[in-house]
Length: 266
Image 1 (cartoon, rainbow, N blue to C red):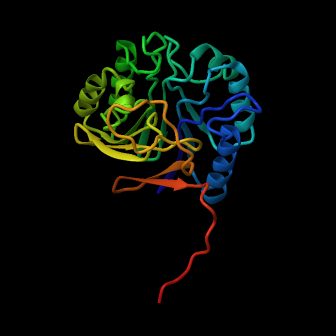
Image 2 (image 1 turned 180 degrees about the vertical axis):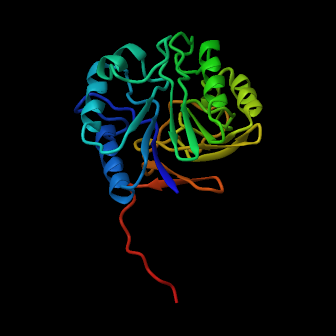
């Protein structure tokens, strides 16, 4: 069994700033330390987009500092709050396509991880996602090259509607194109996304979808056409994927809850 640690929607801000009174940098460092202490045998860490809040160079520099001592390989992805140029300024060696999109893959045992770039820097609403033809063609090749491996696809924007209609409005605009290609490939065992700031389970074309919480601020349970910028200081979390012979198991760990001693019921 292999383990993958997943953080999404970190939203780092400049030093001294907060989001609804929470310090995203302190939350991420607390969560990363918790994950590494409890799962030092993990194979990789995936950061599933919205690495920063304003896409400012000092924010990416803070992330670089935070990751300098991480003992595990890290996959970096972009979300709607990110921008490619300042990201690459801090991470010039980041894996990317010839087109400049931040897409890459990693093979771990019997699994292939495929990390997509759903950022649409030209979006009129500034926050919705898009996968252009070049990115989808790259995905087709990555899926075809997986061989007998099961595939886990990571995308910042989820490939499903969630019922949070304000967030769905700034979702992945061509999610049907993505789901169709994943279904045709026939080897995708799990999709993992962020963007919504809530723990949500669903299905896209019969493929399980897990949407994970932020280590910082969360979306309140406000279904319907609500403001997509609503936030609440619920516990921060990270995801833990267990890659087994039978399939993928997805856990969500609320690391900011007070520690409690385990008890045995008799």
